[in-house]
Length: 135
Image 1 (cartoon, helix red, strand yellow):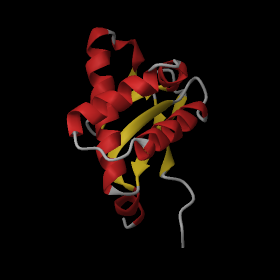
Image 2 (spheres, one colour):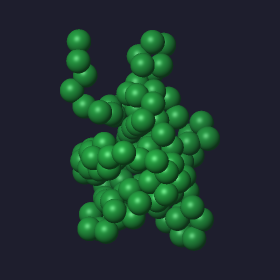
Image 3 (cartoon, helix red, strand yellow):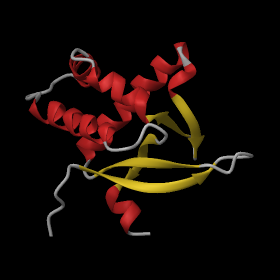
Image 4 (tube, one colour):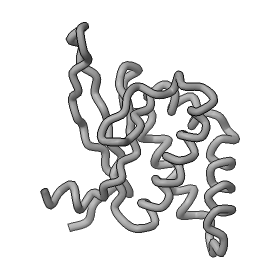
């Protein structure tokens, strides 16, 4: 069986303290080693950016930063953002033969950032899709 998407989103409901409202947290799960590497880089990239401005963080679950979906939408809608992340990833890894897989994954992350509502969050999970399914 083939999985259609490069990465899958898993929906998790999280209760928020006193106001009893529920937020939906989407986990981006990688399906191969390349995606694990790229998702890890994107997560570290956002963590560095968030240090300057904590407004993008919704919460932290299992040591994973959960970003406001509107924060991610705004970043991914910036025309230069994907290029900046791709160049940073290439600079960190070095020896990249083709940029097509990098841009393909980043465009998929952009599509994922458009799915959730403005009151939800997205985390870049350290788990792979296979490890999540095999539980």
